Image (cartoon, rainbow, N blue to C red; front, side, top):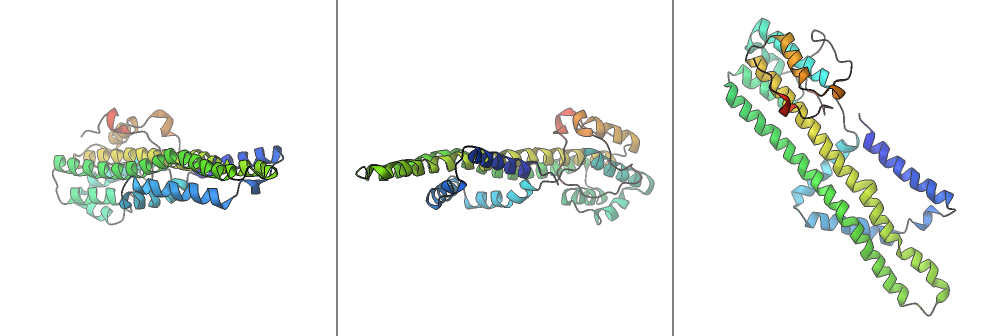
Length: 281
């Protein structure tokens, strides 16, 4: 689990609470139902209106993974591929069908099954590349949705403030009430800015980043299994895959190739390795 986004959002709201306390104000002055309903309700509504219902559903499903996103060290992915290479080298490619039944990652499972079925290498590459692009498109859709909310929210907040100020101008005959009413009017703008910068934009950026890491992980697996199919030597394959991972993302740890298990991995922490070379036979 990588709690960066969840921790960051909590710290941001904590800093806001600290400021309110230091200023001698009260949190209750900001927790007003009317502006919050307008800002959150209208922002979501116009966000949905700017796309399709399916876009909204995809974005909604991505919230929890974004908050609790997992990061698997690239070395773990490399170790898994090296184990597969050792098995294929010692028992033949048909042995990978047995491994396909044990992995949890559908991407890797499908690749191994196709290798065991004798799919041509070029056809398999095209198939896996299409699957990677499809996954990336899903993540881009979710990221774009929340980025759009981040753009709408401040403007919706201003709309709420204008509506409230109109109500203030209708009550100029009660000067004693003008101060609190004006203060209340600006709460909508505050929530528009808060929701955009504390929630929607961080979520959109996080989903985009996780999408990049997932693309990198899948690319690393693709190059690895294609090299396994081509009969690459396990140790050399491990070195080549490691060279595809930026040094800052390699880190430490990871099981040795003999101790690792060929299983599906979660969101990776590598950058996109696609442009850094391909694992060859």
